[in-house]
Length: 398
Image (cartoon, rainbow, N blue to C red; front, side):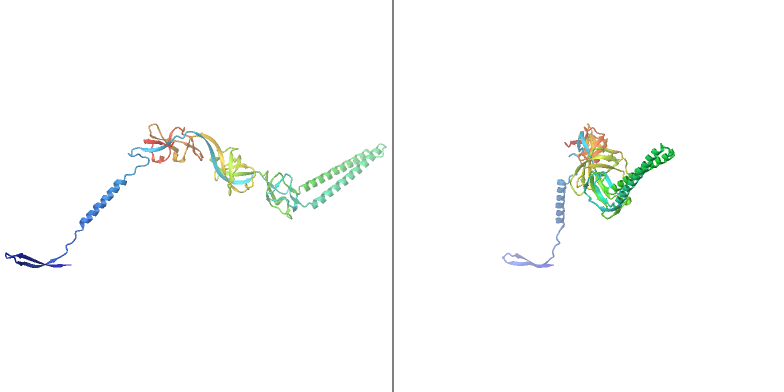
């Protein structure tokens, strides 16, 4: 927008009058504002703020373990010493009866009359588990007794005839040949008596085997027969008994761990679904290794407890013996193509690689089977940032 301004110029004469010298109209146009000084000032202020921030907190990050000068790394070291370690091996497996005895039909079988036991019952040796109908067998035994009486009567008659013949032979009425025949008849009759008695004893033995009885004292695990069922020697196992109620854990262990376990080692067993722990002992180690999974079976003997149910799943904590060796945390042990190793700091504070052999793994750490005496200063962690021969500043963790 333009503005017009009238400008009047006056002057004073000698006699004191003011006269107009000039009278003009001036057009005022707005001058453009200069913004660049403000922009320059804002840029300078922003630059000053950024520079102050960088000087205050933008220091260069020091590398891992380096001191303030950034020249020598500081590393944490530990002298593990040598202590007695008790190794443990964790495994899983299935519970089972230590000596499971399948019980079936021993005799000729027949119809089951009654079953006086249930699964979970304790039985003694010789106790009847199932009663088999023996009505037919009883009549057969009675017939055998009658056969004995018949044979005994025949034997008595043959003996009487022989006695009379011996009296007549002296008088010459009977020849010696007749005596021999009568003697043979008497002996045959006596033999038939023995046969009849043996047949009766056999029948009685068979009758005694009709009932199914417990071969040993123990806990009945399964019952697969009901009254009225007809059973025979081909019926299979009708009962399963855990002898003495003894149980065991069949724990699957890798072949390397199996070599560290010995018979008699203590084992803590925890069945699935509970927090109760039972103590047992290793009583047998598998003599073979499964070629498919490279595992063997450790058999752990356990006393009877209601929570130990055959077929159930359980975990085991097996004691694998004790050793005297240095112990290191997992962070101190490194591995490459050449094997396991650690970094130690020598007397000149230089990093030295030391190859080691790893032993048993425990909750307290990993035992070093060979390679260390325990007096060395071992780098505790972050060994992957070090180079062999590098000078460091060791800081003890103890």
